[in-house]
Length: 364
Image (cartoon, rainbow, N blue to C red):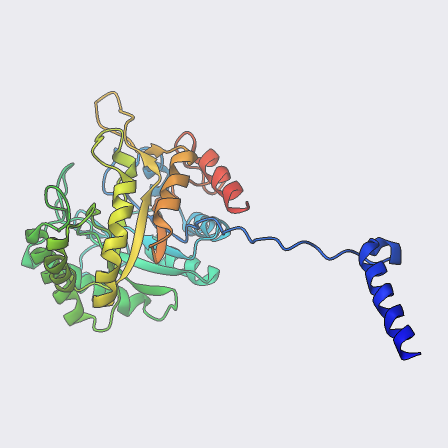
């Protein structure tokens, strides 16, 4: 009897295996599916109250000059809706004058704008959206089309006073993550190292800020270094230590490729893989700043304008940066990648198309 029962069970099992599960009113098990890799995601962007270059920002600077709290609230909410969690406010001062109601004795008299406190408006918007913000120090003391910040000792003292004043005024907001240094370090010819003079100047600035605002997080967004050679690794490590910042967000320079064919963001991305171990040694985050603009359009007077890039190029930038970047940010959502609404009525031709194409890509 046991042998017959055993044989019956064996036969039943074979029969069941040969019949479709639907025969028994059961759903068949779904075949195993390999999960698709998630698309690279932008999680931060620069934002400016008044851009330092009137020509670059032709498609947003005049409108933003008239913005009130509700407009800043609207653009930050739109950034959050696109998946961003971090705002980098490019500058809290312009041409030596603060863009917020600063300490007049140490920072100076506020630049007159219809919005009484645009810096505070952006911070409060970030707070309500659960986003972080880095406040830009500068820019600039004296500014011309091709000039860098005025990094004299007096200028360093002014920026350190501004950092102290900003933390005193807005430090109670959880959104405030640290400060962005508008001082850029440039690469030596051929790449691989920063210009030593830039490192010397920037390190004096960071020392001045850290002395006045201890424990603060500092970020900068310098030129990319292409592919550092093996013999450059040691000197570069010392430069990273000297800069004394917590985050370096390398510009990928994709926005200038049409003007300078020698620039290649894929070469920059290969360099990030070589740089990452050095950043880890000194405890710095490596972010990538993907440029979402083209810089080839010219005004009648010959000055160039930032216009939105095509998404196909941005997609390649994101895929190049994603394997190494601790965070991908862009320059910038405002004017170049925003959706146009009643309260955010800005943007160069193609900005909304770039916005929609990215969201479509993000949603698979």
